[in-house]
Length: 358
Image (tube, rainbow, N blue to C red; front, side, top):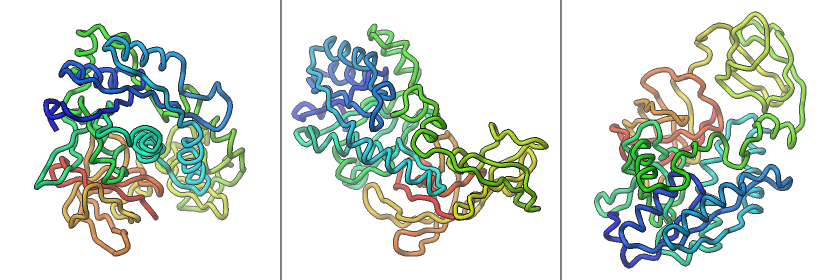
């Protein structure tokens, strides 16, 4: 959808205080549009100091909205975030999986809880994601950004079809450097502000400290996968991810985390800088979620983490939303709980995603 086609649309902008969403406001305002701006307040269950809805973020958002003469409203999704996104994260981690809270935040909060509270009053919801949409054969599809490093279609691959129909991404056609250039040219207050890192609800809090706070510690054995030899102990399976090499603290390495046995509370590792056990070429996904409509998934490309790389594969349909992924080459660090995000062969159109199982 071109910005010129938005004249008669009621538009809500999710304004975070960061440079990306601020340039979204500029892009819309420069077309003579008057969107309403919303700052979503999220965070964990308690402890205000753990709330990433910082005063600085809100100050930045307020300044940008005022610069363009737009209304800014704060929407408190604190409780919804805790009951949905952080619960999902803790449940998955405790079960030995590798969750992606930012994926679920888009579905459940930015295009979910916000829509229930205020977004339903608007035709379109604009965000600062590096993604695009395109009408192909009369259907609206999610397509990738030209910036392969910043592309965020993988974070959007679980939103519902009705959410995609309302979503617009006014900076999705830009490279990140171009967004910075716009912000600096327009003298936006946050033009030089650094991008946020890590999981959105944690702010500056260390992820392992957060897990320790809510899940505690549960000591167990660390065994070498090939020999069964005990090489140490861990303080909780949730502190480790499949494919992890750094921060293990075991002598005689290097060691890679290759498997978790949740029932026995055992962490399995393999020795070496690049052990074969750290790779998988075939794996299952379940509950595959199609973005626009179901398509015949055969020769595709996919990614399992937020990186610029796409991997060719053949998808074998098993029924009930389950598929077997046959990757062209072995992949490092395939972990249950990750989302396998699937694209066409040219990694342009995003079809959707499913959760990886063992």
